[in-house]
Length: 448
Ligand SMILES: Cc1cc2nc3c(=O)[nH]c(=O)nc-3n(C[C@H](O)[C@H](O)[C@H](O)COP(=O)(O)OP(=O)(O)OC[C@H]3O[C@@H](n4cnc5c(N)ncnc54)[C@H](O)[C@@H]3O)c2cc1C
Image 1 (spheres, rainbow, N blue to C red):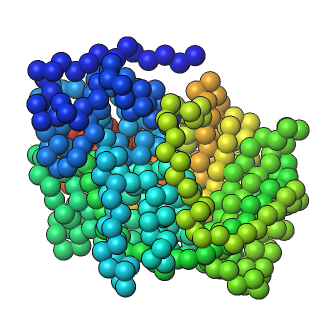
Image 2 (image 1 turned 180 degrees about the vertical axis):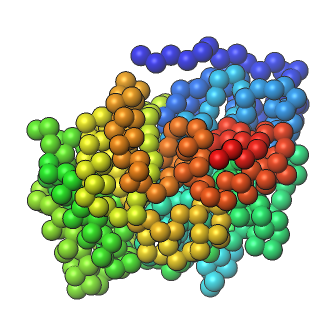
């Protein structure tokens, strides 16, 4: 059984008066509902349900003077569990969840950082608009939109951050900035991939796409011959038209062999086009079950807003990006199954790779798959040994699926000059390293 440190309330005289009304502290009725996240039990001294920039600025000032741990939280679905803490303060953005269609004709929308992606999709649907964001409706806007956003239409529409047109952030000094291509463009570049290092994002503007009904197919394969299956599945996905995006989850089946479930979305409903596009995927391996259906896109990611209580036991997660699933790569991924509770591959490529690598801090624009392997702490070392064997076949890393924060992870996430540029911007925008909770950038470039 997991235990946490017993929470201590923040002394009243330390919390600014302006925050007392919106602070939830140990002993308060709502405390149990806000202290934990999806992967971590927490014991914060205060969860500040911020209403506006001033609350955030006050919370930042308080964290700086009292030197307590500081955490920003949007949806609480961060896989690293860094959106709660022990004895510190949590800036909870859940109340900043408005979804506003700024211009229905052009598709420009403004979304609060505290909204959940399922609610965003549902709010955009009546306007015939959509934004590819991820596969889970309860994931928060702020965490995903500061890192990337690999969604169920990513091969057609690119990453979520490829659609960002502006971001509003409260910086370390408490000021609110609206950054876009013409205003603080360096900050705008950094926010799209390394956002959590630069401030507390309060809202974003996105250029959405016309999105109505899609065809979804859930296919279960016998993947006991795992490497051969993955090689065929990978080749079929890469050869598929851009309208096809497929996410694959591998688990160990009851008989000990791997079973794979693919969630494949064809962004359209024309039966002939759907049939032609999806048929090659069915040849990747023996199909145990296949169910295809037409649905409004937003129904694929409902937001349940269920209580968070570290319900995800697979708290160790490894992330890598893959150019092509070659035979050696497939063998390396298959070997992970011995130590991972779950292995996932999300297709990227196609439209994701239309954006130049220099456009934003997320610079990975040649890869076709995002790989994640998750396990329990007990199997961490075993998984890491297997991951080491695979590492030379990977090309980069997506931060949202990684729980380690070392130098190699930063280099893999921000290759070449990207990391040096981020470090220089960090020194300018967050010189005191107030925002070091999530993949902290170092103060000086690593010595190569
Ligand atoms: C079940 C599940 C499925 C997922 N599927 C996908 C997927 O298909 N595609 C994909 O791309 N990702 C996916 N993810 C990963 C997800 O995008 C990240 O975990 C993301 O960080 C979660 O966002 P959140 O706001 O809920 O996180 P939170 O837990 O609230 O925050 C995560 C971290 O982001 C930072 N942060 C949060 N909000 C802000 C803010 N407003 N300003 C600055 N920093 C902030 C904080 O430092 C925090 O530590 C999935 C995660 C889960 C748990």
